[in-house]
Image (cartoon, rainbow, N blue to C red; front, side, top):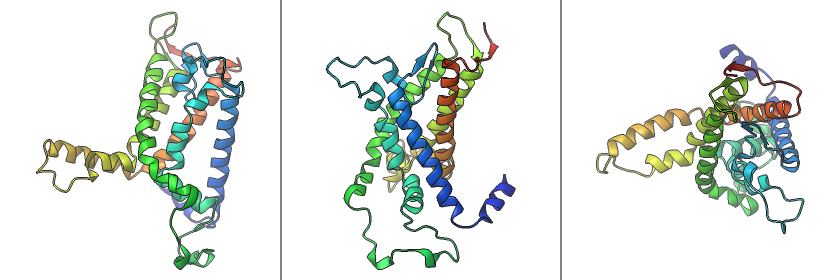
Length: 252
């Protein structure tokens, strides 16, 4: 892994922002198509893009172009769009603001420091990130339920299938990304000046330290969980279309 990181750092400075542009664009387009297709449940599996909307029936007066996932996906997409790490990623990649901060790249900064005005206009909405985090907890809880449900097929009994392992790995990575969030870190202890003065302060300090260790890898969790969401949904659609068969490791 260290050799891969070292090789990546030797690449031209523009490779990273252009790669991020490509990956986030593909993810955005894929999510848009998935929302329009809206086929979210197949036997014991539910697409991680849909969660509990897969069991929702919209009222008849709702326009046909509106699908149930539209009522949900604004939460995880908003959570990622306002995430501190992703903000840095797409500011540098899509807006080149700045395009690079490494040695020798400062001269490529198109904006003069004295002209920096912070996050204004539409981007002021990034300040509601903590509320997207609160809503995301509900989505993550439901995805845990769906992940455990894959171990219990509709016909009864218990199974361990390739799909159930994929769903479990996905929710673990999504949870790591969600709960390594800076907002969660602040919520549990970042707003305290004296742990010994507060009730349960020792427990909160230990939890805060644990989340801080998780937070140190927040960018990695962001990308791991993004790719796991794509991989899980693609696997789901391959099963649903009959292209592949979900291999059962244990169970009938």
